Length: 204
Length: 258
Image (cartoon, rainbow over all chains, first blue to last red; front, side, top):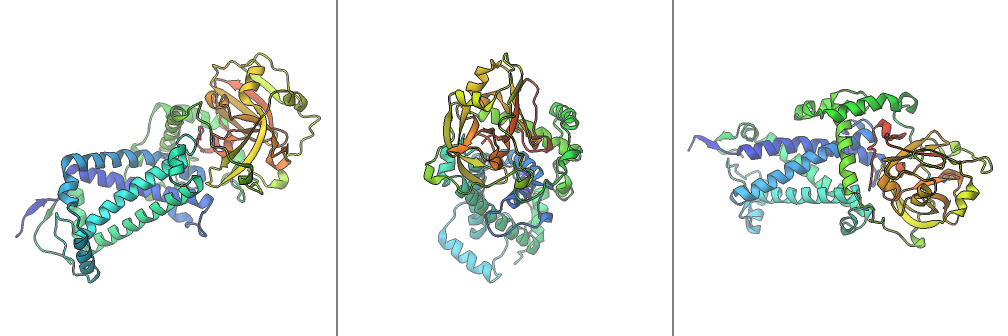
């Protein structure tokens, strides 16, 4: 079997790259903000941070947040309304996740262009959940007075900072795995740019 | 009121309000975001820190002004900041300023006067004794620093709304500005100035403000980040021109509501 296959709709590709830029800005500026008053026993190296100083990092964070949220809502709306989530990310069964995870750990999980395995589906749902948590906990620590019930939901201002950090760490871990998989299967990169890819051959 | 253990990243003497005011007005007119939106540019953006006046910095300043407007809409005059029990007060309360604690200004209460100017009808300066004759209000609230740490403290003093009424303020004015004895300055939007928990604090805990916490007068605003709570206040003025602030003019978001 060989031929061209439409892999990623235009809407998904646009949302993906806008999200990549927004996430890059939010992570690196967020690390700069964290460094001003670390909640754990370490600081991020200055070269990993965006903004140059606390005021610059915050300006970046509060500018990029609009792109992150607007693009995220667009993607969620598109995914739900177009059937993209239903077709690509469902069904999700626990036993498939276990089986695919076992294969992946032995590096025996084949890559089928246009179809996500169960581990991928779980990770995409997981990162969407983390994205929701990071935005909501971010709102809680941005507006702990005006959005007091939301801040209380996350355990108060100080605890909400830790929730925000932990959700960030989960997203950063997702990005690391995501980039590592693209490095292992580089032919997945072009379709996210042009939308189409070859169907023949399975990479391991 | 930031950076407890670090010097400001840029020498503040180099930054003047007048230098930024023109660029602020300019960038408000045109939202320059185009040069910022590509992933490959991300690494080059690391140097954009609000200090260079290049196009990315202008976009960041413009977004900050947009965030001012959004926050003004989110602000509710009747929404009170949470209050806490005396047992929850942070002790010791952190010292924080753009200088170290030994450099906090030493002010003689007998000589101190609160100057009043701008869009008010009664511009007579105020002594501490006269401020004490006005009704006082107390609060135990959380001070949240832009750096991310927070601490609970107790302040009491004259509600700013009462003071503004006492000096015949034109309440349709947009801004209330503060000048401090330590060269610090800041400003509030009028709705926040009139918020019931915004006070001209004279006491910290049960005692007059200690030197390190702003003797003899500190503006306590529990609906703003800590740097919008100026200490050692020497003058108050009411105006329609945004007076900016020490950190605000270097790039901290001006509204900084919480």
